[in-house]
Image (cartoon, rainbow, N blue to C red; front, side, top):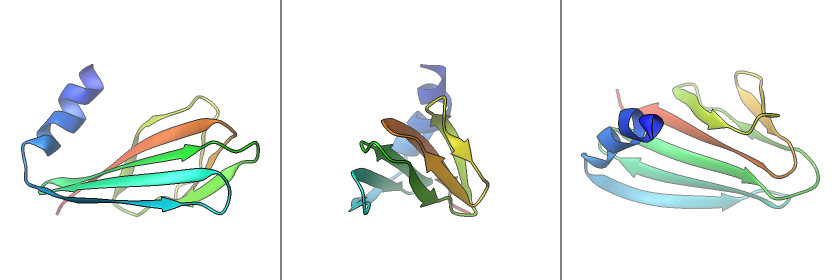
Length: 90
């Protein structure tokens, strides 16, 4: 609840600017929500193989499954895992 209050609620106070999604080559899904003050992105891996996705320069990891590997510009999501990232407008 603290994470939600500190990181997500402030974004909700700004204008909603849309959402998008992308399906990975495997059974992976990425969903992004854009607000006036920044963006939230949820990356999920439903596959038995690892899924690698880019971390944009202004993004930071808010939450990730325990076995997540964060390699700065790329993160590797193990099977059946996820991550929530946030970027600020600036």
